[in-house]
Image 1 (tube, rainbow, N blue to C red):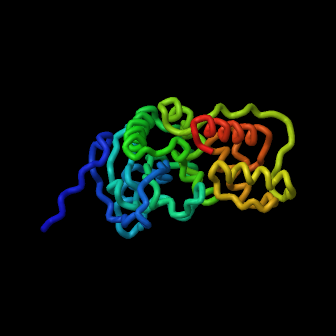
Image 2 (tube, rainbow, N blue to C red):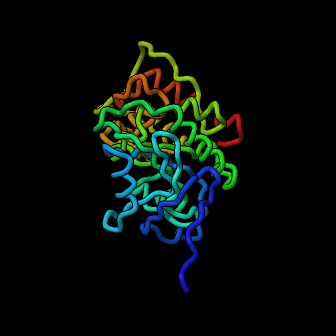
Image 3 (cartoon, helix red, strand yellow):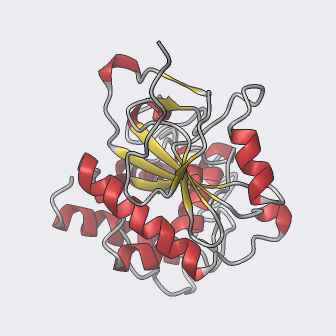
Length: 258
């Protein structure tokens, strides 16, 4: 008997471009996280072909073209191969607990051009539907760089997270202004570093609380800045970065998350 053709799970998806690259979600996990990516390839068509190629070993649930058209590649119930090694809030198999959206954009290697308004409108419509149907917490709407700091930079500092927040998607506070003051950077050690690492870990980032500001800590700080304080992404835990982080933690607590 031939298998029935795949149908989109979301009404926001206009078409199907089925990828063979998926498997069972492990340990009976249901998706409670939404991960946004950019393709990082010169053309949308090339990226879509790659995500549907069995040789690539990668895939994603949804693909959003520059004009906002959405294609579904993998059924939401399945484990798409989009996030790779990473962690968030104690979860280490991000693929098993997430739904992934790939957004056509050449990325940093291609100059990180702005995301077109129509494309962001497509992302918002799709994400709203997914989040509502799966009851995904706002704090678990994240970028690939959040769950894989140091390894990934997408969707990048030009992604309009504030626009998504205004549409009811994801946590956001206005970034604290740049200001003079104490900062922590690579090579620093001590109780202040350990306290800063503890705050990033409390928010969800996978960072060792060693008291040593090492390469891994710098990568986490840069990932945080890329998402929440994009004016300067340098991996330095300056006063603006830490004030923004504290504001997010307070905002999350105010809506019922520890």
